[in-house]
Image (tube, rainbow, N blue to C red; front, side, top):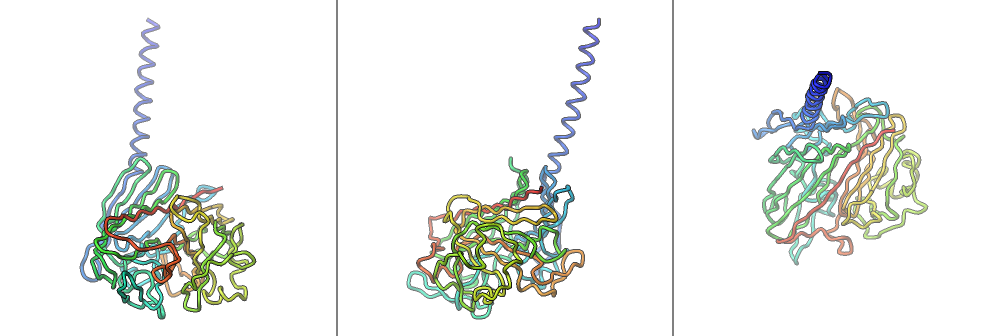
Length: 383
């Protein structure tokens, strides 16, 4: 009799445990799903959606298919408080008015092409000039202003969003019909993983990147000068007054651009140095020591007050560190916060600026039958 009672109690306990475990699994599963909401329309009437990704570790990313923009990224600090660490706006209309590439996917060519011209297979191509004398970040209507097709995904690593776009032959002056796919995954290891792929039907040049402005203290809180930066690069590509690479790969040693060991960003940013004068601070491409191809640590940035650290891993050969030098308070962001001078920093993984005009740089030419594949991971830690 006692044995039957014990067996019955054990069975009830097992059922309760299974129920509770199932509930927890359901909650976790729910937390890891992608949710979608209508977010307005573009000026020409194209509908735009906003997607929310939540992982099992308490992080949340909100991404819109307009420009593939990362609208917000909520990350816990050392005490567990979750805050938004990326600059942006609360609504679509503010993005449509124009902005300095907050959170956007950038293409066809991230960064600058000198005088908006390059030669490929003996033919000269002319691009829109939208940054002084140069073409910048894909032109007047680059990938940051496209409405991408979106598909929600659930992966073993966490919730994901697949974005696809056909950039037609001649768009913004670039040759070839280019099919682009970008997959954002918010992993359960507190990583925002970005996988890029692309294929073309004609020789073209391509340099895809992501242009989020990060502030690990919280978006709109203050400047990023107290953040501590490390970049895994012994060399950088010095620029002229128009921020076009000279072609040299220069050692960072004994320059303010030496981040081979952790340095507070504000410590040397205003030194009387020609490169800093040209960029009005840090706005340069670092030549990563790994050379690209394999996923490797490119940079680490830590904010001491919050305890947050962001590590950047990439398969790209370069990374552009931009310290928000041209932010000037004209952009009023989420929650009415004003984005002032150096209130955000960008770490844009990339091939080098103006590579089509520098044959010694790693090539950005993509040919038919080839597939571009590139991965960048922004990993967040707190201690």
